[in-house]
Image (cartoon, rainbow, N blue to C red; front, top):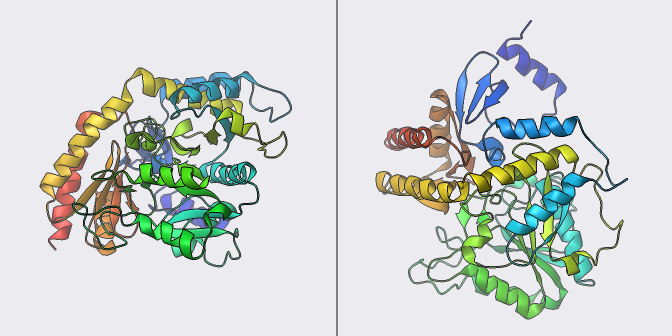
Amino acid sequence: MKLSLQEYLNKDQQYLSNALIRVFHIVVEKGEGSHLFTTDGEKYLDLTSGIGVTQLGHCHPEISNATKEQLDKLVHISCVTHHTKNIELAEKLSQVLPGDLNNTFLCNSGAEAVDGAIKFSRYINPGRPNIIAFRPSFHGRTLGSTALSSSKITLRKNYDPLLSGVNFVDFPNCWKCPVFKEPNTCNLECLDLLERNFKQNLPPESVSAIIIEPIVGEGGYIPAPNHRFNYLKELRKICDDYGILLIVDEVQSGIGRTGKWFAIDHYDVEPDVITMAKGLGNGMPIGGFSSKLDWMEQMPPGSHGSTYGGNPVACAAALKTLEIIERDNLLERATRIGNQIMKTLTDELTNMARIRGYGFMIGVELESKETVDKVIDECFKQKMLILPAGTNALRIIPPLNIDEDLITNSIDKLIGIIKKTGST
């Protein structure tokens, strides 16, 4: 006998850890394309993609078939032997990664990918214990990745001492400049925040890596500057000058989310290390970090590992995901429709919202957290799921293959809700 919604929620409270937050208190039992279906028969449009994971929607039939076929062949082998699927996936990734990055360590999640990248940077730069991260970044929930995160105090409270040697500078936010400049007149004075650290308290020769999200995710969907000046190109030069590895965290922004394979491609910059996860497996747990073969070979066998990393079933899902994105020209599609969405939002919400992003990674900054909460609540009442980002922004992250009329109508509905909410 099927339980009622409240009975499910009561069991959830009793048997599942309270530490795991759920934004919407419904119980889902099925997903199909851009929609979720609850135990009590309700249908919701999902504009969250499971926080940027289901790049091709829920239960894409080709990906489901690929995983089912793999389940009948090989489910798990760990590092006992080699297997075909992680070799095939790593080769395919080498074809879409930026620049000369061509070698990948596969794991289970974005946080693991970040932890691996940290360890990797210390192997490449031994004796340089410090790392620079940006405020308000989010890099994961392990102790290592938590130490690099600063988007919310709840991420860090009561967990000290965390990984030592982590130093923060402010992210170059053109919508809330950390050095109080305007985008049309700035000269990247925000870079002085980094250089000042090097001159006053953090010798650059002690820094193994700088890690940055090309587009800040949980901290507000904020792209790095790329208007009058290209911040990431300048950061690349700084890293080159001091022998510091540049790690770009593409866990949320990668695998086509921004209309390119990786957000860093918008900046024409080749990082030293790139992390990925979320959209790679379209819902199957998989992540990784990539660099150049001659650098990756410096980590000897056994210096890092993962029991389940590169699992054959997850790799099968990832291979099919990459194949479909490429075959169906979804990068171009996300760019085209994303640009249309951002223009519509900008035109319709003048003086009410600030719109930013690339492709299908769009931030809508409103006047306050209270307004954001009201908009999300009203969207929920109208059977549309949308998430916050940072303190006062919404994030729009639909599947890359969402029906064009569906996303267009949804944006019109969202605009109406924002106008109504913002005027009350």
